[in-house]
Image (cartoon, rainbow, N blue to C red; front, side, top):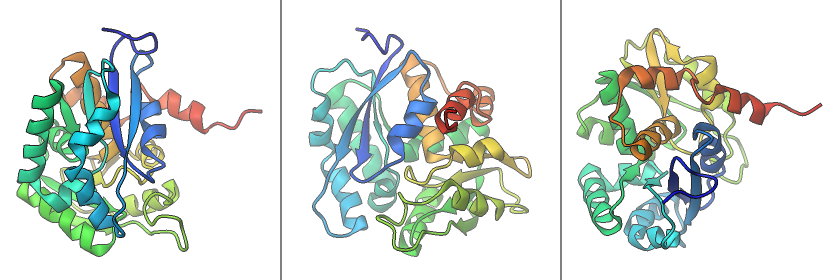
Length: 258
């Protein structure tokens, strides 16, 4: 069943409670005839790590926020949770949610894995906005998924910000991406759904020939092809990374009206 503003597909998105990046980047990345409903993942836990794990524990309840809206897929726009619970628990949660909802349940981390598979990439570099403990959990996750982590570059976190990741600027992300020069990798992942990455990727879609993904470009790409019922395609993904289909929307969003 189609809805007026999403005749080509309606996406349900689960977003961490203080994340300021997911909705704006999805709005840019989704094609005009697709729409999204957003629901917030909430947790009273006092630390970032505890909240991330709590999000996974609460997925069954969080997904009910979409009620009977005709969503064609649900996106879990949070990678840190996948790193902390691990690949096996993530896979189990996906299987459970898909059985309950009857729709594809797409996590950001698994979307990156699908994207790396479509690109034929095994040796990867990570641009991380995380504190050291979560960065190491991320690296362990990618290794468990069968990838070789060849280099990790930390993005600078802002001082005295409301959140160490969500308050980060695209300039900091771009500066960290420059640190991947000479890494000798097959692909680069700009980690997290909270670090703004669309501008840096448009400016530099590859480093030394290695395509640059972010968790948001990967999950949006994976959701679009899920709503269309298509299979992952490496050539299409390379065009997507270069801004095909969304470059103009990004420019319109970031242009200050006269």
